[in-house]
Structure formats: structure tokens, C-alpha cells
Image (cartoon, rainbow, N blue to C red; front, side, top):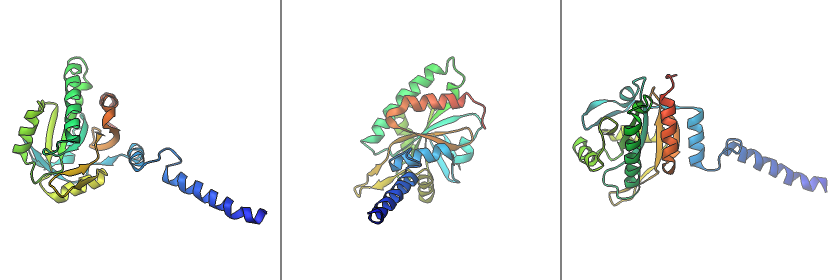
Amino acid sequence: MFRTALPGIALAVAGYASASWLTHDFQVWTAEGARRLEVALAPVAVPAVNIDGPGIPAQALRQWLADGQSVTLVNFVYTRCQTVCLALGSSYQQMQSVLQTAGKTDSAARKVKLLSISFDGEHDNPQVLQAYAARLNADPLLWRFVRMPDTRDTRHLLADFQVVVVPDGRGDFEHNAALLVLDQNAQLVRIFDQADQQLALDYARDLASRPPS
């Protein structure tokens, strides 16, 4: 009887060990949760990619963001999107309003910036992004828009930040929606669900109040 129980025990132990490894000791149960935990434990530096945008000449994204002061909330969009990007735009409009008001009295709020990065760089040139920003009433002092002119740079950034973008064959894309927080050294340090925009904003303001590490 003991011998017949051994295979079952071994299988249970193996299953437990596998589940523990896959879920980071049972802290997460989804791939997205694992991604967020990994970023929190080991920040991801912005890779060597080049961007441009309205009022932003071609330059390295990492150097542009790593000013030693600003904390940046980043989302990934494309201007032809009629679904999730509209919701992301609405979230950013609300956060922009909060930052404009808070910035009058809170120095940390003045150090938080909003950035929308287009992954449809061939279509979303600076002129298209400028028109898109105007439709959203984006304040260029707070909320900027950029793209990677080189599609290889786009793939590189998406891969490093584990942003999923899948063409649907009709000129549109399926993509995950999240709010990414980059610190003063251009490192991705936290990822929040779109529904947690207030939590993401509060975290960014707190991080901006601290001296850069």
C-alpha cells in the first residue's frame, strides 16, 4: 500500500514545486501578474531606441526620459484605435486634470509626466500625433506623444516591456492596456491595470517626491 502511494505523493510534490516556480511562490497566477511582479522586483531599463514626436526632435528615448527628476506614466496606443485607446486617452485626460490642479501646490505632482507611445510608427508620424493630441486636449507641458520611426526599435521596446501587440489583418491591432511607471532614471518600475489609474498616479507622485536612487 505504501509503495502504491509513493507515485501519487511524488506527483503531488512535483506539482506543488512546479506551481510554486510558475507563480513565484504562489504570489501570482497569471502571466500578466508575473510580468508585474518581475518588474517590481527587477526594474527594466528603457532600451536603446530612438523616438520623435510633436515638438520632439529625433533622439534616444532613454536619454530623453532620464532627466533625474521626472517620473513618467506611459501607455501604448495607436491613433486609429477606436476601442481600448479611447479609454486610455480618457484616463490620461483625467490624470492630466488632477496633475494640473495638484501641481499648483505640490512640487512632486509637477514632476510627474504623461507619455503616450505609438506602436504604429509608420502611420503615426509627428503630424498625425499632433492632431491626435489636439483632439484629446493634451497639455504639452504634461502629456507628450512619440513614436519610433524604425519598426525594429518598436519591436525592441515592446519586447523589453512585454507589451503584446497583434495585428488583426485589417489595419488594426489587439493589444494589452496598462499604465507603466518609469522612474527618474528611465527604468520601468511598476505596471498598473488601466482601472487602477488613481493608484498608478498616487504611486508616481510618491516616487517623484523621493530623491532618485
